[in-house]
Structures are given as C-alpha cells and as structure tokens.
Amino acid sequence: MSRTPSHDGAPRDIEALIEMMARLPGLGPRSARRAVLHLVKKRGTLMAPLAETMGRVADTARACFNCGNVSTSDLCPICADEGRANGQICVVEDVADLWAMERGGAFAGRYHVLGGTLSALDDVGPEDLHIPRLVDRITTERVREVILALNATVEGQTTAHYIAETLEGTGVAVTSLAQGVPIGGELDYLDDGTISAALKARKAL
Ligand SMILES: [Zn+2]
View 1 (tube, protein in one colour):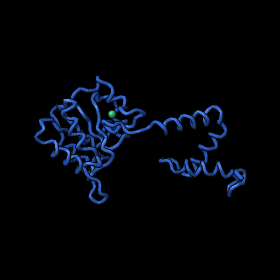
View 2: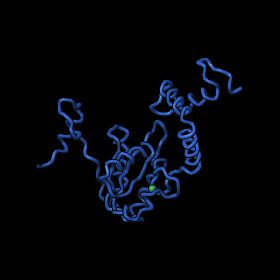
View 3: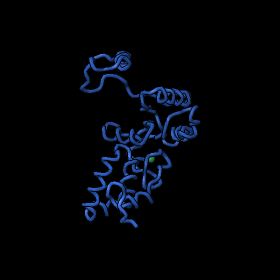
C-alpha cells in the first residue's frame, strides 16, 4: 500500500514525510521535497542516524525546571554550571533568543526564558511566563542584576515594564539591552524609531 504512487509520483510514505517536513519553520513544500529526496539518497549515512537522534531527543527533551531553557535533563547545562552563577540573570522571550545571546558569547550569567509575552488577549499571565519563579531565583541565586533582553515590540516592552515593576523593592538592579544603531549599520537605512531610540541611549565618548 505504501508503494501506491501519489499525485506527483512519490510513494505515499515519502509523500507523508514531505508533508511533515513542510510544516517545519523555513521549509516550504518545495524545500521539504528536496530535503526528503536528499535524505532518501543518503539513508544510510544521514537519514538513519537522524531518525535515531530525533527519537532520542523526542524522549529526553524537556524544559529546564529552573530557567525554562530546552534541556535533556531536569537542569540545563547553564543552570548546572556553578561558574554561571555570577549574580546576573538575563530574561529572554524564547529559547532562540537565549541561543542568540550564547552565540554572541558576551554574557557569562544565567538566563530566564519566559516562553512568550504578557497578553490579555491570549490570556497569558505572569504565571504562564514563570515570573514568580524569576522572583524566587533573585533570592535563591543571590542575583544582583536582572537584564531584560526582550524584543523591541509593544508586547516585549509591556512585559519588560511589568517585570521591572514586580522586581521593585527587591534591591536587584533591573537593566535592559540598549536599542539603537546596529554594528555596521548606516543611519540612512534605519527607521525613525531606531534612530530616536539610539539618540536617547547616546553615551559620552
Ligand atoms: Zn536552566
């Protein structure tokens, strides 16, 4: 039955695989088709090990109970590393943002992954974003500074203000990433909002 050709000549199983792959971010039907064809050609050296690794990660992947980072054990490698307990926590919206910060390699502290932004419309409240846990961590991890690295969107900034208000009176310094001219950026290409944010965040040379 699996050999029954579908409309474009691929067996039904392979067609099903293409349809699943096409649901991945960044892959449309055309690139999913190309990826699956490549996998089938390299089934011994790539497809079988990929399937095995995917199965293993599907079994073990979970959110770090402390920070919300993706992990394959209860505590992610960053929370398990005592060297990262430097009194700083960087708050990000998503694991992808944490990875971006780590790629930059400039931050030596720990993270707190919200998993979204506050939204009355979608019924997302502080509990859903693990903000009470963040407050607990201030004490348990002797945090001196919380760095808000949220997206420069209305939702991101609303959430940042909420967290700053929540942490008022805890004695912790609340800072946020600077917004402005990107490295290598040309003023002529920036939007008005970015230019005025950069002007506000100017510093002495
Ligand atoms: Zn963690």
